Length: 392
Ligand code: C5P
Image (tube, rainbow, N blue to C red; front, side, top):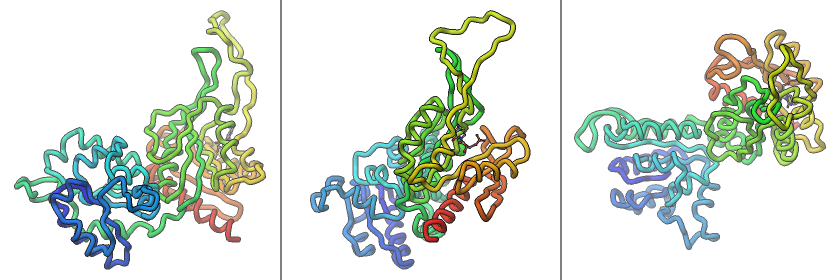
């Protein structure tokens, strides 16, 4: 639990008590300003552990208290999180123990804001909160009501009992903890000449949502991304590529070092045989471009000597099940997630999607929902199948 400097810090003492009662092992980190509101002795007595306040901890064996704590924690909750703390985390600043710990953390992070209602409603704070959510951090509250400053509105820290319940409702241990997951996402661009290229409608949203869901499940994530207009998930190792050939190289060279590969990219199936060094001039009424088949990254990953658990996607406009099952077998995949494209509001570039997931001896339908929620369900299914395969 990380405590930043707000009057609601007194409520955090109760949160420690409730978490201990549930059986949690709690370690408390306090910012300098939190120390002005409540004594570390209170948290030490309630948690039964020493309280951490300094970034450079001479007592830690390797003088890297933030790394040790980040590795130790299954979950981090910041309560109260001040407007300043939220601003810092949303921009990746790391100038004290709390912010550095959060940057180093691979476990789920929860933020319980507490501030004056005008500060909460300021567009800059709201933008910062949106950034945190986009980076995979979960917000708890704030609540509405009377504030310590005498005003009324949103900004009160959620009650300790509510925060405790929220933390407890999530799975105790992330189910991909320590697993390495490689994900490819987005479209590729196949250049024709210095100014033109062939691409497709993939937005990368599903692949990025999968990266976030895998991180939330405790995995270490490498994201090989084609050109997209999305903020990269915090804590993922992002490798940017443009062409199918670059994506092939980036994925194949890393795949054997990962436990799971999810091919969510819309890789170009064909690329121009030659890139013209100069801009192609318009001349005839009709023209022809000769295309060459690209290498199938997914199928090649599945052929590797130390292949990861391999998951493919199938975007189809018709005969979804037949084509998906065909790809599962011919590409020798462990699992395939199929979805309709070319229909209203689903598939490429939409916020929502639905999936039919197939594996050798089973299938599951994941019905229409937001891509992040869908990604969480798919990651959970992948984790289950991965465990079954590796304990069989
Ligand atoms: O055969 P099809 O392109 O429909 O298969 C889709 C799946 O194959 C997706 O998971 C996609 O990422 C992957 N793929 C690939 N390399 C290609 C073409 C598709 O990895 N060259």
